[in-house]
Image (tube, rainbow, N blue to C red):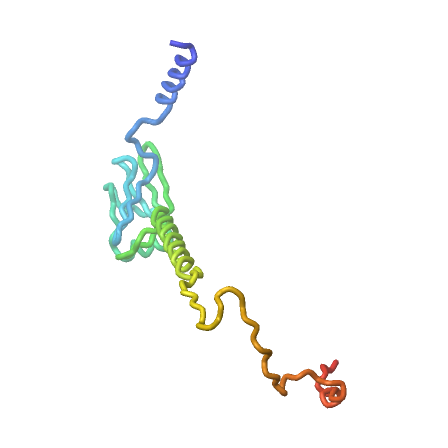
Length: 180
């Protein structure tokens, strides 16, 4: 065995002994249900108090009454007293039937699914709106050669679109753009 592996094992052993014992709790446990809140003191011989008034000597204690739940909505301090230690917790909880707990996983799932649906719609729109080349059979008219264009006669002159002659310019002079 190398000296480095021995020192690593000793450090790991020291960390194992410096960790607190398993199974002990440091604070008050809170379990929130749809219609109740359960408080559990860390030690069995503790007394649970709310605003210096004893609530229960038994643990776990469950709050189900409307008055207790309304106090929890506004916020209240609970204290677990024993000979050894005192544990405090400020609790502000709202319970309701049919409520959904918005955890990190649920929020992330909603965002990811929304992005996937949006991406799917974008891809669908892209592929549906792409300009496709039309398939036409270019058949030449009878009598015209396929290769080069045949010169056609000039178009018939239209008097409405003839260019203005020098003698007629004053008739249309009032149509010039005016500067305000």
